Length: 182
Image 1 (cartoon, rainbow, N blue to C red):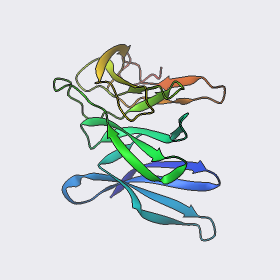
Image 2: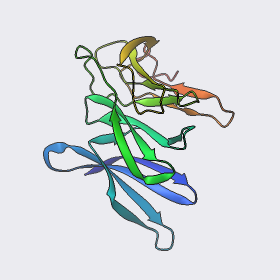
Image 3: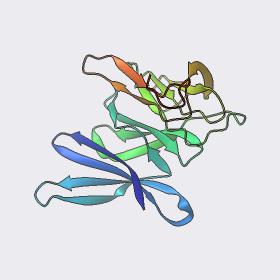
């Protein structure tokens, strides 16, 4: 089956990132490109990102690479980083976590603070605050996940950058049982 679709337009090309579940229920992000002349999706088999589940559209970093927040299978926060402006080549980087911090569906969101400084916010599992990690090298390495003081319901956070250049983080309010956005 396919699920978790992300659509992203870049340089007049529409990309589709779809999670495929095959044998043993292990996910793989498959990349498709829409062929404007036929209106059909073309599968880019060589562009697969094994074990990666994306949860936000690509964000451009200062080094020219793109980054997608997500998870490595169901239990680890992860990102995928492009090979420069080539959105058909990706490398997954798993964000380290201590053994005592158990995650289930970490659904990572990335805040790009500029100068290749990134902040990953993850969906909590057994805690009432967001697990977070920092990268100072464009996502190639990360600090070990730790609990922040940011209250977060067990739901997916969303992050990005507005056209004004300001970062945003959307979450479900902890106080209202996932009924109110913050």
